[in-house]
Image (cartoon, rainbow, N blue to C red; front, side, top):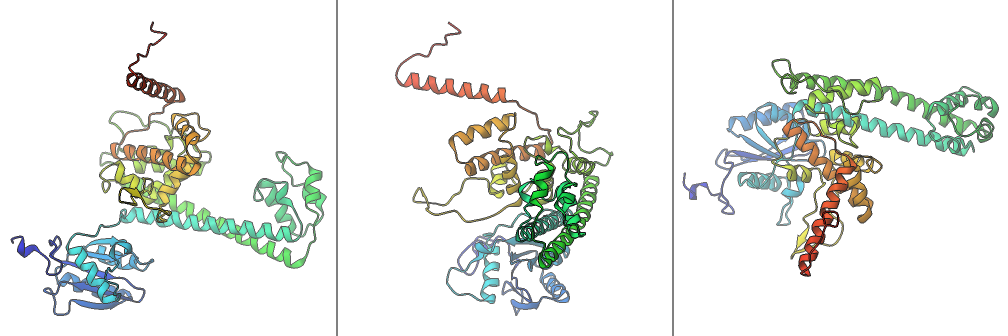
Length: 456
């Protein structure tokens, strides 16, 4: 077919995907559009029930559609995406900002037709979505994060109840839910009101003495506040048990993915004939050690060897991205997806005013937190971060260091090589070389010569 036959009827754009469909996703209704030459009714509406989604997939399959684009609308796109993906379509999840109508008209019919037209011309980029098994792990990790946030609110509720009774336990304890705090709170809920008796639960490592703890536990024991404290503690225990169950499911899923990633000969991706090296930074608890080993087997490398990246950060990267980074052509694309690259809001050669669009990325946020933790690290990355803090504010320095960590992660996952530790002396040597090169450039500028006193 010639170029004229490969042109779209509207807009004169070259057709890249001739047999495609566009879907406007809703909660209880989905509007689907195909090319007018494929069906007498090219735009149809389907309900939100599972039988309707299966009918939608059957209709598209009967027309020979191979590419389907749909908007990321809330969470309503997830069941439709999974049904279409299971049916064998090339399903592309696109950002709703990329499909906004430019004419000002807005309707479900126009939206699905516009999505189909953009898809046929190849003007929509599919969002990154890992494999189904990694998506399963991601769901467990995100569920655990929500449970941890809910448990943190329970602690706030307990602090409020204590403050209303003027029990200032959080003033003498650094962690209200530590060993001492929990023993005292459970004794209060159990009926103990004597401050001296409650202070007996003080751990010897608490800095405040027993008399100070007893004085902080003298309060106004009103029934309504005690009731609120009791219920908050019950919710805390319930959420703690649910987090433990989520942790178990996460470890099982990571170990299952690690088993799938092993080679047919029984190896795990390490070099032939070379024994597996021990983790660079052993985890503190047995559960963390088990998870650390499973993550290493799943990813093929030990990300926790990088300064600042712990088991939690490695888990966030594994659950949000997975071990396969083939969708990212190079480090620049990977860092841009993590929202760690400089912005491109430029017009007329100048950056646009105002804050950039707020977009979050869980893996990128985990790397930012890891970057903030290397400030006191006696490593090459720690020295780089401290150097950035001397000339940049904290937010920009954290973003720059997170960008450095992301490049290391990309190199390790794509090349399958372990991290080689570098010390502060390496950074100092590089900085000295940069300063010497700068001085030589300045000397040449003024037609002078730079003399090495030690060499002379």
